[in-house]
Length: 58
Image 1 (cartoon, one colour):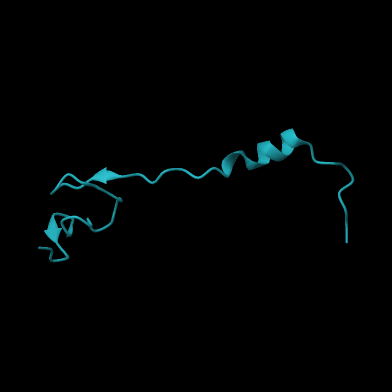
Image 2: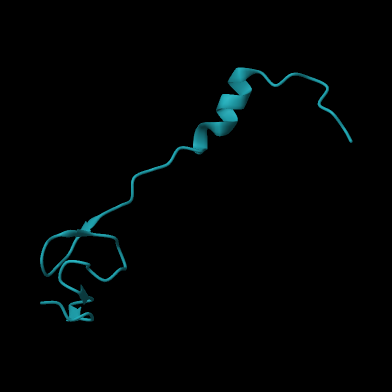
């Protein structure tokens, strides 16, 4: 099995990992109730999607 000929420096290692950070999810306001929700998903608060009720809520 091949082995690396050079030691990977901390700088090179960290530069490679610079894109591994976790980002926060994007939240958009619901057009009906104005609560934050994930884009292209049914609103968990009011049950609307694309200006129509998909899930009946109380």
